[in-house]
Image (cartoon, rainbow, N blue to C red; front, top):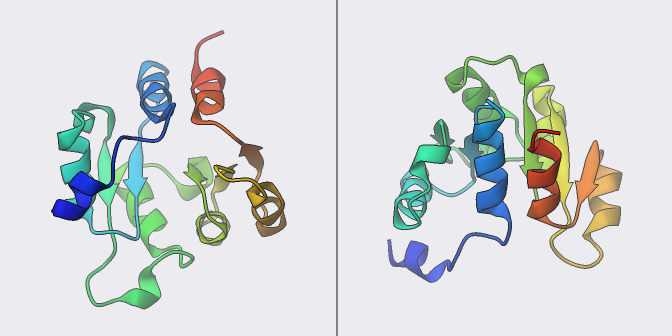
Length: 142
């Protein structure tokens, strides 16, 4: 798990977004093409596990089930007991947006680098943000 330690801190604004989701009564799943064990270790290392309801990582020995395939998002939807149409994925890659569309959910494209807005929009992101604080602000009570 040395890779987890070298991953650094959570993305700026991500903790605020997780807290806003929790405060607003939303359920949160982390869906990753990394292993679930790595994601859980990262959450524990940064004391964030209480803000996450489910973690879905890549299925071992099934690369075809990784995003952009909808498999992991459908598992997360099931784990949260929510239909995919009521789920919104926040992701920073075209494959994230494609997976959300394939699962029948919505997506927020996180354009965390210059030039990503166009690719995320072309992939069909419903909304595009450039900071995770924008997500936190959108989830905060009025």
